[in-house]
Length: 244
View 1 (cartoon, rainbow, N blue to C red):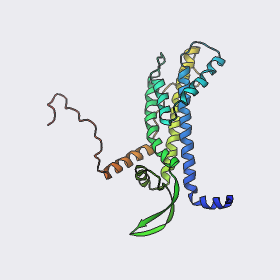
View 2 (cartoon, helix red, strand yellow):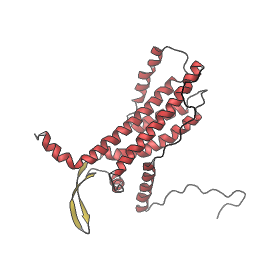
View 3 (cartoon, rainbow, N blue to C red):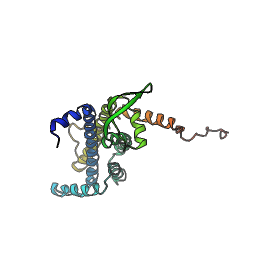
View 4 (tube, rainbow, N blue to C red):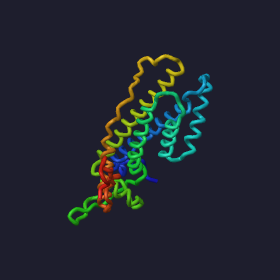
């Protein structure tokens, strides 16, 4: 059995990648937790008056339903479906629209979270001018899917993973604030009085640079595969004949 110091030396070249891996996983898990908080809140909205002890029973109820789904993406979809289809008198349409947008961005970011979390990290030979380059620590190995290898080749710098972490954290703050706004409106409905210091305007969408970068990488991969980019349906000119 090798000593800990031996493994410390072996892992040292991968330190920047394992740090990125941990931070991306941390930020993603935080966002997943916030979507669960949204789901728990939805299960409690516009219930008849009840004690705190009775309300607390909805937590294990919500938790049991949440973990019936073993997939993070499906769990986020459950939270959005619950709030979107909730019969309610609360004015939360603006919040629902923002949560649906956030859900879409989360799915885009999660694809690249899966890359760094599930792909092995190994030493890899490189080639430059038909010559072998020194071994370098990289994400991806022999077991990595070909489609994932194409995605990883588009990532030119470890800074991408820092940007991915930041987008997850900023998106988490956004979803958390929208969720709290919905909770404030429910409190005001129950108590007939505004929450002191609460903001009633929905937050602006955060800038997510990594989402745009991912879209550009996908376009590059599709172009290299010979796939034409999707342009959507052409609109018929108003008052004119259909285009030839």
